Length: 276
Length: 270
Image (cartoon, rainbow over all chains, first blue to last red; front, side, top):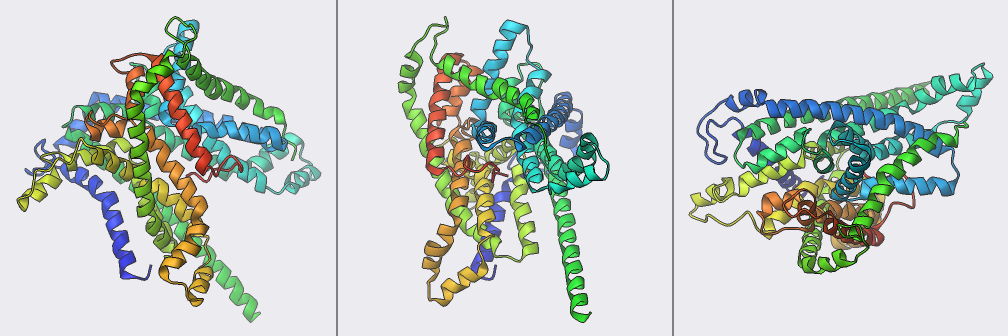
């Protein structure tokens, strides 16, 4: 970015992206309920937030649902990826096409279609809306991301590795657990993380599949915004913002450091080559 | 390695139960009445909601175009930054994405209200208070704000692959800034543009939260109508399914215009 205009443009863009969030955070410390009038500093809204039963309960619900759904989706998706990997082109592209549906389908349609399915289960099998319906719904939109992350790892894996393991005395089973799984582990892990974040973040699908009993954090937040003024929402936003920024920035620093380290190694190797 | 195809069977069953059958149910509901008999009435009833559908499409198109215009230079500048700076700049594009879009939309409510910060600021200069919220502009602003990163990221991911020497070659051969963009950068960015258009248009055209929070009931979109047929006051899943079916047709039409996926399996989505 050389020109002044480019820099200016980027500054304005980041101001546009961050200013609304920063305003929310600033007013989480405001003594009065006003969202525009600064009347003094307070931590009250944070204290109230941590005493708010609804929020705490829905936070626990969100964690339970997100962890359960992403773990199950990771298992289902990894096993599926192994099967899909060994398929011929036509059935494979058919399945991958179907896998793509939850990714591209508008969330509201996914939400209402699953709601209709669960209603059907309620009518005919005595099913109840709640944790199970939420976890099933979350798995449905999580699985594609696991498959998208695991399949490329399978494809780039050296097929000779397994043969080598077998030559060295592994049976198929051992080769699978000692060679294949470690090879594709980074893909499994990033798929799991993606599933987890999508589950935590989800509002629309949960909104249609939760029934009345179980509320997730995003559903609780949404119902709080309907009451219009509630600075606890600001306090909650501030906490979420800090946590997410910390995670993403740490991840970025670690990756940059690794890149720099690798670069230095390459340089070192090259200088040795040149001198030796 | 020979993994067995049979490993895919649980997943195939899963897709059938949780993706195919639910969508089938939407179609069945759209084509039946509350007694379960076949009818086209729901689809005919849709005709009285055509204005809402039309508004949703127009709003989403405007938001998509604004996102494209804002994102194109941003993605280009980031892609030409030094590589260490690039990852930092991209992380700062992504941070807001991971904050619930309800909170991000709520933030704009705070700013746009009649006695909100922007109006108070304008008031210092004796302007206003202006009507900034509960209108079409506020809804479109909400879409742009929420989905702008969905445009920047795919654009960046194709632009970063454009070799600097290609750009320099065009400049050496006397291309002006405008023709450099029009004849080199734009064509090379096409896959990212298509992905970005789909990634912004689909959530925009189907939203119901943004329109409810920033539109104040005066600018209902098709998403609001569908929501109210399933969870709202006017409970009628048959009509709601007919609306959803029409929305799906709109989405499929957009996909057919801009589709980059499907042909190759790995998504370029984030």
